[in-house]
Length: 141
Image (cartoon, rainbow, N blue to C red; front, side, top):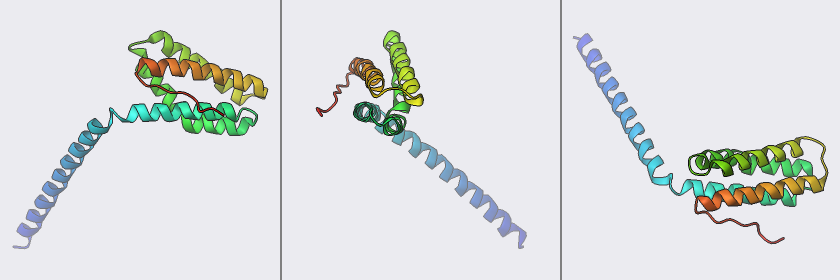
């Protein structure tokens, strides 16, 4: 007699566990589809603002580097991936300009060189954002 309830409880708990798993998967899928259209725009605008801030910090290589990698780096990769299907040339220019910034921030370079390569990356990023119907500009300093 004691075996039947345990087997029943095991079967019931397994069924509940699987049901909860399906619900979790369904909720995750729904949440991704609802917010995915709004998310890239704000993420890319935040990345652009990070580039502007990095350029302002060009006199302090450590601060400029931290801001670039914390605020912009990953989103620029994602923007380049999105551009690849519609504007391969801008995607390539974006990755090349990003690589120049990475080199300038990793090496002992002058403040003016950091500003120059960041300005180039800002312009290429602005072009890429425009092709995605996203307007962005650096605040006046």
